[in-house]
Image (tube, rainbow, N blue to C red; front, side, top):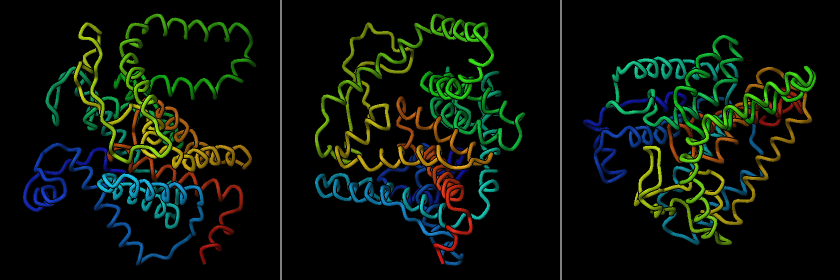
Length: 371
């Protein structure tokens, strides 16, 4: 499942036939191919689980309530049935990860491979060599979109640092080359949170130096920030206006950009462009489910509180930092709507849950719970 961000399958033969009967089209667009990989990959893992001994038993009531809310939403908005399969499979992947993973660090190893491969293709594209996609004015690596590439490289920085601090240079350069402003801000805020105490201890001179760097960044990138966020603010404002108590159903979001032609869209968004998500995972969930989305926010809060009270090892720290980066990215990107990101994100949260419970109750205790 970790390979889903870079999987490239030819749309031929039985693969094309499956695609036609699933989606009603045949396309070499890798988004469809990666969705197929996501779906059939999870089903394959579920089948394999019948031949493995379950190590732990998942007892996650808030996640269960969230899934129940999704089912209620399908009843209230029947059109949502078209996407409930992907949500159910995502939950199944989370459950399989928690119940069957033995060596957390070993499972994380493929992330290094995917990040390095993306980095190699980023460097090639930086020098005008496009081996997979058609030439664009962006650097997309193997992820098709620079924003997805930036999100992926950002969230794996702590994980590659876990394996070797020098390896972290790869995703750091990778997300910088991707030039995704929401990702920049997310990493900056998470990094600032981590080092703020150390900066204070170093004294006022270093504090002023860091503040100067921040000011320089805002001044230098002010125009870009405005052009990036103008559309985001507009579409999120329009989304908030349309919120209802029980939502409007899963996968039913669609808005057409109505901004004036003379607005600078930074070569990314144009008038009359159709959006299928509000560029925020949180607004997307609230828009779809309304008050039925509350359990998932309690689940996120509960994991953060649990992390604060447990004894932390290096693996737990890396997984938590990756999760925090993802939580911040979620404010400016609907990353769970794309299988190339969703598979990795779900597994990271599943592994985080394992380490949190092991830190709080001990590995032997949660393993006995599955017996």
